Amino acid sequence: MEKKTDLQDMLNQLGETYQNRMPFHRLLGIRIVSLTPDDVRVRIDMREELIGNFVRRILHGGVISAVLDLTGGLIAFAELVKHLGAVPPDELAKRFARAGTIDMRVDYLRRGTGEYFIATGSVLRRGNKVAVIRTELVNDQDLLIAAGTGTYLII
Image: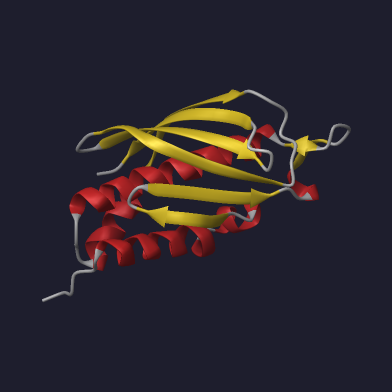
């Protein structure tokens, strides 16, 4: 019989995967600041490679949308983990392999200036197969830079 993993252990495994095993996330330099059943925070530091407008030295819009998307996916999957309770690690891995973004909308509200940025979000609705997540990206001054709404497959 396979050992079941508790909720925080599953979230820790999820965080490890998102932060250290996904090549694109490593390229962006994301750091998971918090990953609990009720609080997900992802940080990205401003770097030269992430600048979209070299004159204004602002964060590229594609980086903003990518960070909002990966944060939304992390929140959706954390919500699924919370709902499932303790499950064997292989079951969690199978579900993770099938997860993905179905649709996403981003509203760019301010220029992406700052030393670092924090993405957070919340679950608007979770069904059996799909979760709808609202995300926000703020800068180091706590100014709202962008907001997004994403629909994620979580079967």
